[in-house]
Amino acid sequence: MKSASSWLLSKKQWTWQCSPGLTCEPTTWHMGKSSESTIQIPSRGSSMTIERIRKLEAIGFVWNFRHYAWNQQYLNLVAFKKQTSPDPDQQHCNVPRDYPANQALGNWANTQRTQYRFLQEGKKSSMTIERIRKLEAIGFLWDVHNATWEEQYLNLVAF
Image (tube, rainbow, N blue to C red; front, side, top):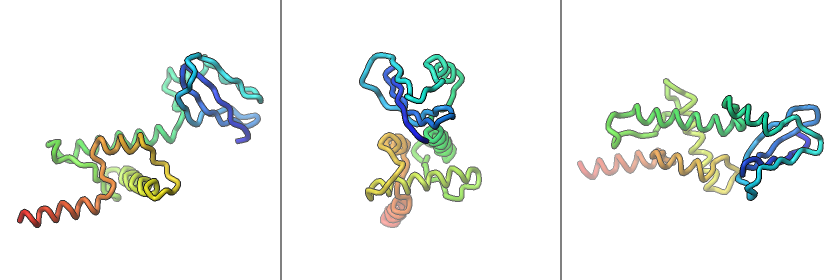
């Protein structure tokens, strides 16, 4: 990708990755400071217009596939949690890494824990504050082994 250009649309700033001779693709968006709907045309030109953007959005076009894929797995995790028990107090998000019904979900949950650990250690991570909040809101545990140990310890003390 040779150049990046920004578009400001309805208070959202889209970051585009453009290559000469190729269609520009949006990669991320950020809240803009302007309340105007303006567009900044890339210096190399682009066929993307506000009308085309609206048409694509009307049919559910996915602008950021990584964000979309993360949200899909998050929804799978919410569904997994609901399936663990009819009693909401007994539901959990501890997907086994080798979960036979959805191994991709088990791998994804493990990846979230790894990315969280990287963030805590100051390493490069795809984990964001928004993702942390969403996962914690549904009771996602960052350290399953420690939580399991604590639970078993409390069972032993109660015995």
